[in-house]
Structures are given as structure tokens and as C-alpha cells.
Image (cartoon, rainbow, N blue to C red; front, side, top):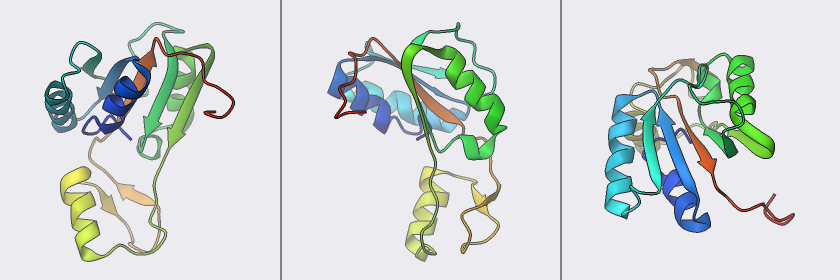
Length: 154
């Protein structure tokens, strides 16, 4: 997820009672996230902020959990990974996930992803999972105040 439209941030806040900082570089995603957070009644629990995954303005060791969804494929991965680890507390967890097409998408699925979820995203081939070019869609979620994860949750 980037913080995208806020789905994961809302789920984490509701599911764990955690304070969440949802961060994205794309104004459209920030606007959608803020709207969804407000409609969910979680604006006291979820902060929505603009930011760049390769240059986080948060202090070292700020967050218990750091989640980056569909972000690192667009940026300098080593630099982004270094920033994610830097802002995670010792003993915390960092999770970075990406997506790819297992098979070519239907025209409807392609339109939904490229037109609604990730506007401006372009693939060099529908047969390959490699991204050729993308507009800024660099979101991530930083979580603080969570309880320790159990072995079953890890």
C-alpha cells in the first residue's frame, strides 16, 4: 500500500488501536486518505502527512511498525529501505510489499488500477511485472503505539 486511499491505515488503527501516521507524496492520495479517515471517525488517531520515502522527516527510532505498500518499486530501493529502518524502533518491524500481475489483467482491471487506484501508472508490458514509468505514488504508513506482535501474527 502506499497510504493510498487510507485503507490499511484505517484497518491498523481500528484493529490494533494504534496511532498511525499515513504518509504519501501524491496530493490526490493524501486528499483521498484524509477523506476516508474523517468518514471513518479516526482523525484523532490517524495523522495524514505528505512525505518522501527516500527522505523521511521523522526522527530516528520513531515508530514501532513501518509498512510500505507498492512504493519501493518506484524509488531508489536501498535508500528507501534505509529510511524505513532508520525510523523504526529497535525490535520493531518493517514490512515492504509490492504487487505484480500474475497474468495479464482484463481491460476492466487495468482501467481500475491505472485510472482509479494508481492514476498515471504505466507498464512497459502487460505481460511483465516491471514498471517502466510512474507518476509519484509513493505512500507508506508509519505506526506507533502498537502492542507487541505475537508469534502467530508475525
